[in-house]
Image 1 (tube, rainbow, N blue to C red):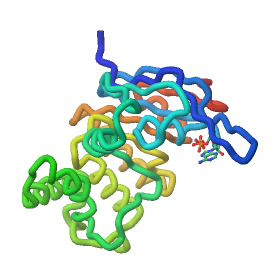
Image 2 (cartoon, helix red, strand yellow):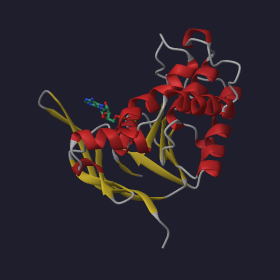
Image 3 (cartoon, rainbow, N blue to C red):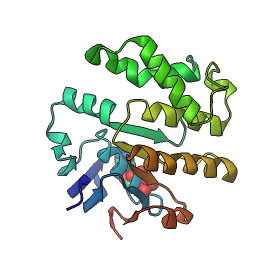
Image 4 (cartoon, rainbow, N blue to C red):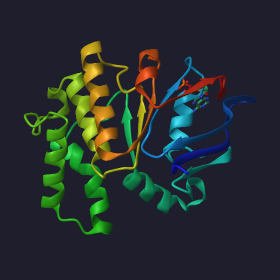
Amino acid sequence: MSKKSLVAKDLHKIYRRGHKEVRAVNGIDFEIKSGSSVLIVGPSGAGKSTLLHMLGALDKPTSGKILLEDTDIYKLPDRDRAMMRNQRIGFVFQFYHLLSEFTALENVMMPALMNSGSLRIAKHIIRKRATDVLRSVGLENRMDHLPSRLSGGESQRVAIARAIMNEPQLLLCDEPTGNLDSNNSESIYEILFSLKEKNGMTIVIVSHDEKLVPRVDSTIRLKDGKLA
Ligand code: ADP
């Protein structure tokens, strides 16, 4: 049987706004195979981001569970879940979220520096790996630039480099090209899909872009918090 990297079981997320309940995710089950690419599509408000945040150990479901390689992630103590998120999950967001005071290289080093105490990794090794990762996304000439001196496409490539710095098994992308033109979008998708091939990581992409459907291994369609 093929290995299941990510399993959602009867997943619910209910937000409360005053007296009103919003059922953002309303009973979802699926299994994602390890090393596959998955697209989550659906209209605005369908629950895509809420689902992605729950998959990424960022937001606790109201009920149901998520298993990452057989670990029930919301059963872990908060500290262990945070460590698991840092070591095993990478995130790419629409608006990059780079730290403006730090260079591209320093931004990419950050997730590994946060780990380095527990893993006893020397800073020069982290710097070398960050340099290699930035080179792999074509940014060898931008390492010392602050985010304000990078284009949108370059910023997203730095964000991808940062996301894969700790060699996660799961890469979650929330509208990764939502702020980019079509040329830059294409190069971001080329990088993401080649990472999947080269590193064998599972990639989950939330997007409005139906053109991605033929390029991924499977598609999850959401509507009103349910599988459509
Ligand atoms: P999508 O990503 O598909 O656009 P979201 O997951 O952002 O959908 O939102 C799903 C529903 O949950 C929407 O009705 C949205 O308004 C609501 N929602 C999302 N986040 C919150 C929140 N923090 N508090 C209250 N309602 C929320």
